[in-house]
Length: 160
Image (cartoon, rainbow, N blue to C red; front, side, top):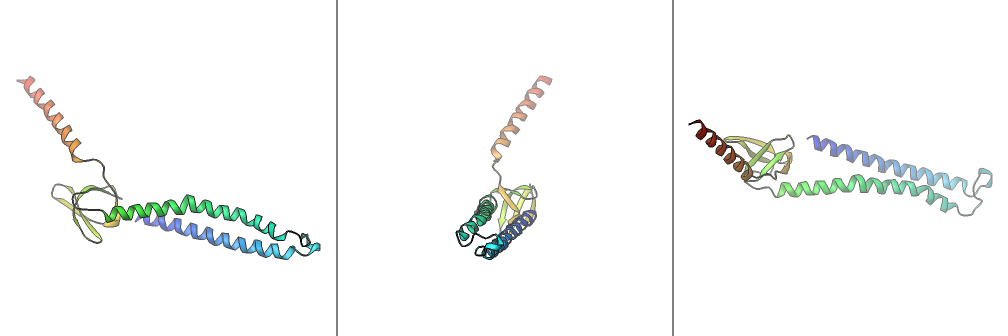
């Protein structure tokens, strides 16, 4: 839910920047048209009035391009990757929720995922709450358990 709020804030910020850019572009075009042909108002007297207007729009266009490449496009890529991740979920996957719960998927539905977080402890979470697939497998944990068992056996043998 927290990620949804951040996403909506980013969308609103980008929407505001686009509207502001359009309004400033309209004002600059209106200002350019007033002074271009009137020598008494500091205009150019009929030469090259539209070139100055394009130069005034250039920073606004650059600002929109920067917003697009730094905010909009990465967010769209991240959203697309997350949707693909949620679509590829299957039983037995080890996942992490946005709240930090680690578990193994035991059941799937369109909106709900049943996760086993411990032996015989299952929780239902919204599919959108899954933030990623855990990379750590159960095999390294078993190796560390075997090492600790071996140490305990050695200690027991020394005690006899």
